[in-house]
Length: 300
Image (cartoon, rainbow, N blue to C red; front, side, top):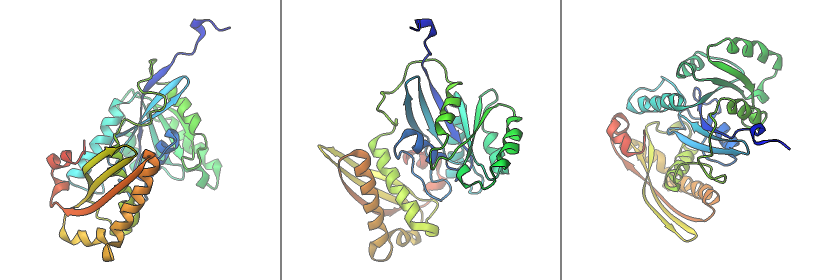
């Protein structure tokens, strides 16, 4: 029988998930957490907030920081706030997971790598390996990346299928400090139901509006009632110009009805209760270029 001094110490710490847009950061977080925590779509900057995903294993608790994709394509206050959110998460983390597309390393990946403070260990997740035809090409890429300062490990993964994501956690655990768990074993996030409701509506907006999606749009929960077995939620989709309002509404209100219906179904699964969800559109000119107003909408 092992003596206490031979027992494996419990570890707990923050793991920042960073990378350029659309490399699978939120998909990876959802896979590790085991539930749909972070919203996903094919659009850049779908993730706009720092979200803590809690992953509990017998010997460690991982506090995953999902972050906006770091990019410079869109200017203005909103993009500055999103980039600061990603940079701040990297600064607070015990270890950083840089997610990149295994098919190609780009200049944008270099920019994301530059976010990591000197001295913080980096684990690079080569994602989407299920889409790589010639796996032999991964070796020279991994060798080049291992030569980068701060890189502690390279793990080829598929966030979509779950391939080698446990191995990724194992590499991260090596760099977490010893400590007790900060959350109950059945917890999966630090975010409120109100926040998750806003994100559910925003995801459907991103997914259903396609190329017509106004980039400078957000969701504000104006009323949230928690009743036994029921949540009554009233949400406003905020756009900047009157011309954007009919895009969100759709012909005869078809688009906004579908956004509300699909978001409600997701929320009922997540919250395990009935949900009444009412969604409408309002115009607030200039909100995305005003950092003070961005804070009122929950942007850090």
